[in-house]
Length: 461
Image (cartoon, rainbow, N blue to C red):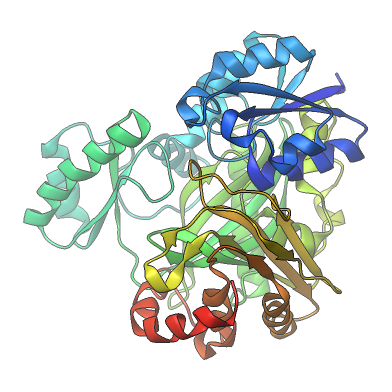
């Protein structure tokens, strides 16, 4: 059944992104919004807008009944969850389909299987995908946890079975620390996700974070190559690029084939990302989790493949088969994305919402800025600080870094402190330019470069 009217159950730049993709498909759009978001760009762009509650997300963007009521009120026949909020909520996917609507994403059962990290690990092992040494599923007792720790050895990573965003994760270096951190991680996971379940993995020192983009229609699956997301602060990505600069063609083929095998094993539907840790000293890669949604960093994949991932996932949800066979998906050039947040990197990334007094958006060849901003808009204090994503493409990685430096120099978000100065420094850093980074590289770098970040404050937003 082709989608006629799509409701966007999200906000900010991803809502704008979805509206644009839907419009190109000839689909009418409905934007839901909280009281704090009545004047956001997505509300202005959509064909219809519906107020669903007060600013706090629990009473608006996480209010399933209010979202379904908005769909009924407007006659929407499909709902796109974007990322964050309800995007990986299996109960929401079930509720949408129970209401006779189309959920633009995987089924509730697929979200349960792959969204729960312990269950996803079991599915990966069954599909023959290599996993980090650790528990085969959730840890059911302290005794089981101690036995696994003895078998695997330290350091160990304790991880929440549900959720994401770096919450519910601890690293233990010895048995005494392990006992204390297990309790902390479980309590944090329970508070954040309503689920205190845990599993454990061996820590891969100096690992790189590499993920594979997959598209699937429930019967067939393809990959759109990989992204590297090793530059992270507090386990949250800040700089993403495609393809991963240190993979050989043979390893790239093996990695991507494993992701397709896993997507096929669970009869996956929609866009998804399968994430790995890669040890470039040994050439080994290990599955860690799957994100059952479109991701913040999807534009770099679009830039190197020419595929509109959001448009494709809307088509698949409407009943279409994949538009591409694997042989039709090529990889060209290199792309980089940086996240422009309303945060001051010189002051420990202190958030700073407020009015946009001026806005200069970079342009030129191979340059894209996905944003929710416009001059005169006031960024509200209630949500994630992401303002937009600056994405560049060039024939080579070296050229893409140079283009990113040029585009960052053009970007101006008047009235706010942003993370732009951080990326200007990273684009000039010799280790970043040589791709000599890993998931624990950035935080020591930030400590060492505080003075330079403070000096950069005077050079623009």
